[in-house]
Image 1 (cartoon, rainbow, N blue to C red):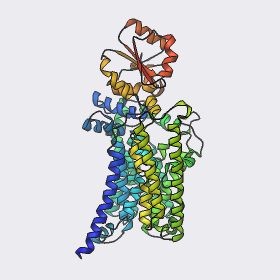
Image 2: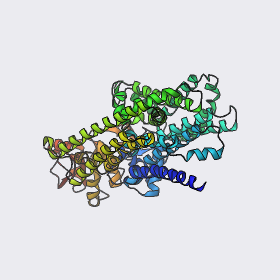
Image 3: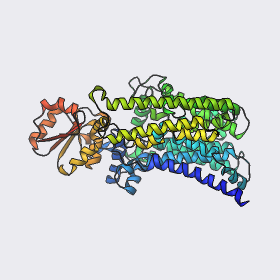
Image 4: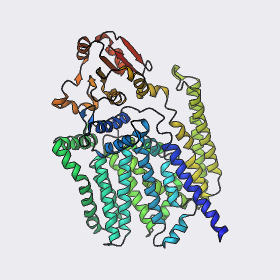
Length: 576
């Protein structure tokens, strides 16, 4: 008895360690090594910093100006991280990977409960010890998907939104699997609604539209028409109770918040002819093969496995039908919007992981599908070999007279990551056990993920990461200096100089709405205004902008007493 239990214990420990180590290695440990990237990361660092500094946790302010593009919850979460860990890059980004990790944990429990319905607790635990059960593979597939990693290491609110949407749908599914009218059903409905309310507090009305679309379609598919209302009113009530207090307070303090937030951030952004980031309907569909790597070329195998359970009247069959609604309908919904950013489809990845795990484990039971899987792994190998050749050629031939990395160790690090990926794709193609095939394929890009934290191209750092330049010269900028910046850099200038009074030169950009208020008078100036300030306050003026812009402004301004930059195509700082 003892000898039979030892292997199971060690196998369980090994795969738990794999998930934990993977999460720490690619999401947590390298989190603070790279500077903040403008504009998004600087924005989601500075607004929480100003909340902490001012004590105003109700009305979001950016550079001291009203900033009503999002509700307050994501800023609160970031502010707590800054309070606990200090005002640094690690703390700014920490909520993102924690959201990813909690989403993976929800997937673990979702598959755990679904895989073992109705079994005694002891048997359920015993079955969970088996290696690579669905409850391990699903979060694994989720964590190593390209988009999840890319977004999960950046300080943007989409990770927190995806977490709450995942919780909303997971708890609702648990409710649908419970005895109708039971206290268990009511508890899960309350949890689902509470998560929906938190999603609303993170990014607004999409928190109601997306789960409503998914869960409504699922109930119709299951022909549970009566449950469309019976299971909806309690979560809706919970969501309203969660979001109502702050909604009332912000309306009382800032009466225009809901008007601007609804019309500008929902209607105009999604439907207007001048929406931001406008793309055609097929934009997301065309991007899917890239963002689901390394699983792109084995999806046919998963599809064949999913088909076998699609009509099954079991918890697994119902979960597959839910996951299909969960993945496809938001993708179509966001495809219909005019404004499109890849981060918007992040909520589609939890169901993608569910379908891939279920489908691959089922599909790989057939010898024919194992062959298809191996071919998919070899195609991935060939693709990464081509990428390695292009990467090497671009660096060492200096195409266009430009070397991507000045430090050779970065090139070596990138090549090591690509070589490791190629070797693991080869192992995935040759492995005999189905679970080993999946794990080798998923692990293929992990060294690339770790390396990515250290390998932002030099050109991108010069254009998109003003932090090192601002930190170097921050001690030489007096607190009574008057600081001007173009709108693209103002958030980073505020964060690194610890100020909320940077004046905007030229276009207002994302500060445009906040600049319309009377108390923002004088915060936006033209070049003549900068020149006048230089005459009135000699020795007190600092101007920060992209070098391209500074060169255009040079003729309209006096010669600076001091100037520096991080590159001819980067960012410059002038003192007058």
